[in-house]
Length: 308
View 1 (tube, rainbow, N blue to C red):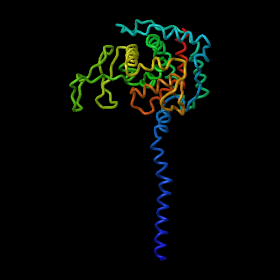
View 2 (view 1 turned 45 degrees about the vertical axis):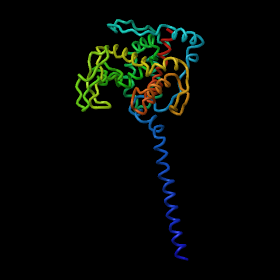
View 3 (view 1 turned 60 degrees about the vertical axis):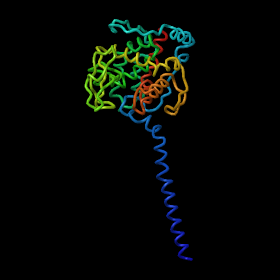
View 4 (view 1 turned 135 degrees about the vertical axis):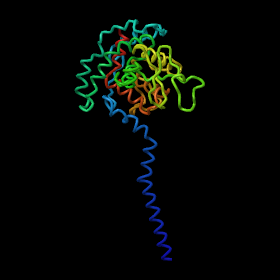
């Protein structure tokens, strides 16, 4: 009888140890795996970018930043013709003239010098240079397509490393747009250029490893065609639902939380929508694009067009 009680006590101790082990090790591990995308999303990748790593909550709606006139101007903007046309020479299109009332580089430089950590300051000037160089092109596309210039610029900054990446600098491809495989392509992984087709705005394809080693990306004669191609892509059936659903200047509910928020400014809703619609495979794509816009307050550039 005494031996039986000892055995029971031994098994009880082992069972208790196993239970505590599960509680202390397995359960936290399960929780990390289950909510990994919430942990990894906001952090992974942001450390390599000259951006904030936490939500700043510095967005001001159109009414807050501009005033009561904004609502009327916004209606006028969305009622204007949205027809997109392909120019033989995109560079002949006149760029919008804005007064830079809401986004000024000097103000942004001072703001970032005060608020961005020293380790993040290295690439700030490259980002600001890119914004200044291409904001007119982004606004021209916004004027015709209603795609926020803030989103376009942020994608260009990220996809092309502020114009310094290979595709942006050598192929004028600022948005990572790929050439498409043609029907009947080789299925042995040894594709050639002949197996790919490119948009009429492009002049060819170039091989760069992305999802696959054989991936080809479109090559454009200038950055203007790349921005035009981006507009055409986002006006397509996969992405165009966001144009009216997330109007510029407002805040909207989203299907999953972004930095702990389930209601976000329009540009953040766009970023979530782009990711959900398949624009990129990176898990934290929406977070990275959003934080570029947040850090450089690119939403102010959108207001320049609305109030032009």
